[in-house]
Image (cartoon, rainbow over all chains, first blue to last red; front, side, top):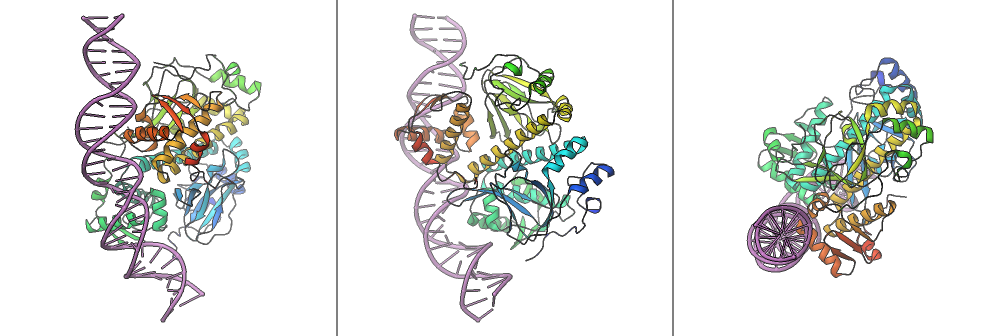
Length: 245
Length: 245
DNA sequence: CGCTTGATTGATTTGAGTCAATCCCAGTGG
DNA sequence: CCACTGGGATTGACTCAAATCAATCAAGCG
């Protein structure tokens, strides 16, 4: 299995290349040192492994180091809704905060390494380090706003707009991580994309083909090459919400 | 304009009938007293007024006392996605935490009174009162999990399932507030419901008719009477996610 | 090499949207 | 007090985007 992201093999936040976009962002050296003391680094997981399941006790929040993670809910008939994809430097597991038990499932999309922050320890540290408290609040707030964009996508966008939004969002996030904005590997299957966008795999396939025929992108299995970013953005121009003043 | 919810006219948390389900839940008397000192009670708003708009500075989080509130995002073409409806005792405004400015819009659905908790004051108080910190985290966590259910609804449910889920969720939340679970007024327009469920008003109308013809509910404008709760629940039986262990 | 699993492509169906009349209150003003 | 009016709600006829059904196709992998 190909590894798509492989930025970092360090074992503490100080030297982690992701510290600028991860939890440590904005903390002082001393604060970071305290954070380092409580952080755990479980052994990496092979692609497809479950990290937690709905109903599991909520013990930690997690940060992706390499690889990727998806969280999802399932209907009785087996249909999945993917709630979010997490790339290196992104935080997941916050769904457990309300009830002290997880309310969705998390799986590794790829060979994935991650960090775990025991919630109780972190809570104590939050008391001592206001900056960390603010940082954690901002993280949850970010998650909330991301979900809101996802709601807008699922409720009001056409299949074309959904796929274009998805590619653009992925492109931007990867760029922020130092990868190319125009050429990247999709860390997830077509089935995962379809479960994220609320459309079928067949439609995804047809849309990739249609975008390719229009010269907007080039698709070769999981490798995506954005040829005409301007045109891709035009596909979602109606969807950019005006609310952002 | 009819007032749909009118539980409470008190001016502090101690005597507020909603304290069992609002922020004060689980706080001691002393902690509650401190909370009371920072809480603000703006003058009630008429139906349709804006409470905040996207881009506004984030100063406070809000709690509905009477009436109801909706938050939404809009596309350029004017299409709205309603993110959430808030009933008395429910908290909104958390979308501003990430960037210190609101990222969606909030409007009163009805003549609405509410409380405002200045975020800076609350943050300070969180430092002194760990219980309040936990309470606020739980509230955000709840919001997150609610959004996840909404994502499952928008992405994986049929129009029938969406409307049935919506009615059931409303019924349960109203019951928790001491109202009837089987007979209630919808605090929002058909258009609002359609923008929440990601389907058109016409479809909403046809579905209400269809549910009524099946003897599941009785609809008279905004008044809903659930006649056969069991059958209504069967409509969403496939959608109850198995994840909840 | 076959085998399995995921992806693509085509043919056909359908659930929900769109377009276009009404209908029906609630609120207004004569 | 009641007719008028305008916006939300309903209903019907028709359309269409996306789902479903059904073959392949391609690529890892044992």
